[in-house]
Structures are given as structure tokens and as C-alpha cells.
Image (cartoon, rainbow, N blue to C red):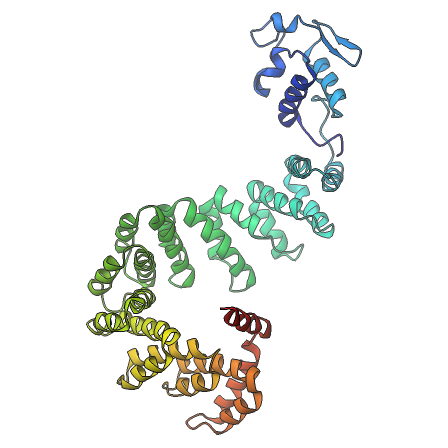
Length: 450
């Protein structure tokens, strides 16, 4: 490790430990905090008591009782192979070299301490250059340390640099540290970002950190965001963090949100969370809340009831008012039942009248059965009314079918009734692009293992 890596704040406890191990008596100034160590001679903090009367014998050298703190520190530093506490600050280039040297340390502890200590010496004008060097050297410890440091001292400058094309976008360590240090500022910047990969990456780090740090404050921040998926994400994550500790408070907070997509997403999240610990309470809430409130909780509740018995789930779902909650419940029944008895589930689907509930159940059934029977799943998906839902489900089932039997899938798509030529072409291309062979292979291996 470079001899220039540890500053006074780190050296004092190390010096103390080393001195004890070597049997060297300590003066009071080395036992104190760094803030007190610099007191003048003769003061209560100066170390002029009996502890400074002892002789510290080290390697044949004697430190006299009259020696000042710097001389004592220098001798301990000599013993430990470190620099003196009074050493002048390093230049940015020296600091960067120190970061590189620290990364070569065999000791993991010294590697981390050396890098973080060096990073703390850098000013905002040098961090960009140091970060590029760390990336070139593939030094992940330094990259994360530098991103956090930049977020603490100059986040706007960092984002301005990469937006002007002067470097790569910072990672989640930067966004997370910024959200912790200045959540309001990070959220303002995030709100102005255009759609794209940077916004996508930043949303996870910034919104998640804000939500977990202070859930109630995060809900206030969510009201400042435009309606949409980012607002819903912040609301759901904040309520999830709150619900882990106090579901009752989380429910009250969700109910207190202003009408809109954010409130619906929040209530859906809270009821889903409650369903994992109190299924009866979740059932009650699903019945009492407006019919179009829950988009996922109904599915979770119904799926849990199917595990008790399909009849129990059907009885509960049947009395729900028509709307999103009921459609979600039917999807949950179809998904869980298909995994237990596909024939019985298909028979139930055949009995359902046309409508949103049937469409939701068919879509869920087709997606669940596609890995085992892509041909049958595709046939079910094709019974959905033309629109976004049918396109999405057919894309999924055809993607799997193409990998299992590309010829059969192509023949079906060429002859299937009710599908236009333009739709056939779009489905073929989308299915080819969407399917991930490696993920499908892993899925099939997991199923075989079960």
C-alpha cells in the first residue's frame, strides 16, 4: 500500500492499536479525538500529565517527555510504515496514483480504506478525470467511491458533464448517494429527464432510495411528479416501505392520496402486501374499495384462494362488482388453476361469457400454459378481441412456439382467421425479437428439475 494513503482521521486509531500491541505508552494527545489532539502545551488537552512522563521505547529510539505531538506521531508512523499526520496534501495526480496503488493491495480492508480515503481528498474539479481513470483500470471500488463523492459535492456538475458528452452517465451509486444527500434536488433533476436509458436507470436508484429513506416524505414528493409510471413507482415503493413496518398506516396513507393513477397504484400495492399476511382483511378491502381500484391485488388474493380450493376463489370473485378488481381476480384464478389442473381451468374458461373478466382470465391462462403447450396457448390467445392485449399475449405465445416448432408456428400464423396481413407480419417480427433463447432454456430446465 502507498505510504500516502491514510490521513490523520484514519491513522490515530491505527496508531493507538499498534502502540498497544507494541507495549508503547501513549500520551493523552494520541488517546483523544483528532479535534482535541491539537491543543497547545500546558492546556488540559496537551498531554502534560503523568502519561506523558513515560518514555516510549521503540526500536532503540527514545521519545522524550518533552517531545511534541508531531514528533510522537512521526515516530509511530515510522513504526507502522505510514506518513506523518502533518504531511501536506497531495496533488490530484498523486491522489489518483494512490487510488490505483491501493487497488493492488492484497488486504481487502486496506484496499477499501486506501481507496475511500484517497477519494475523500479529491475536489469536484478532479473527480471526472479520476472516474474515467478508474473505469479504464476497471476498478469497481474506486468507481463507486468516486460516484458517491461526486454526488455529495457536485451532482449538478457531474450530470452536466455527461449530458454534454464529456463522459459516461454515472451509475446507481451516484444516483443513490444524491437521493440520500438531497432528495428534493435529485427528484427535480430526474423529473426533467427525457425518456431513455438514463432516466430508466436513475428512476430505480433515486426513487427507491427516496422511498425507503422517508416513505411519508416520498409520498409528498410523488404529488410533485406528473401522473404516470414514475409517480406510481414512487408511491408504491414508499407505501411498500411503510407497509413493512405498519400496514395500517400504509393503508391510511394510500387512502389519503389525491384521486388519480398514483392513488390507485398505492392502494393496489398496500392491499397486495396485506394479502401476504392477512388474506381475510385483503378480501374485505377488495370488496369495499371502488370496482376499478385494484389491478394486481385481486389476482394475488384469488390465486391464494385457489390454493385453498378453486370453488372458494370462484365464490369470492363472483360477488365482486364488475371492473378492474374483478378482472384481476379472474386472471389470478386462471393462472393458479392452470398450474394445478389445466383441463379443469380450460373448462371453466369455456363457460365464461364474453367480457373483460373472460379476456383477463384467457390472457393469464395463455401466458401460464405457453411454456408447456405453446400451440394450445396460442389458440386461446387468438380468441381475445383484437387490440393491444391480444397482440401482447400472441407475441409471447408465438415467440415460445417458434422456438419449439418454428414451422408449425409459421403455418398457424399464415392461416389463422381474423388476423390481417399487416398484423401477421408485425406478430412474426415481434415474436422473433421478444424471445430470449437462454431464458427459455433456463425456464425449461427449472421445470424439468421440479
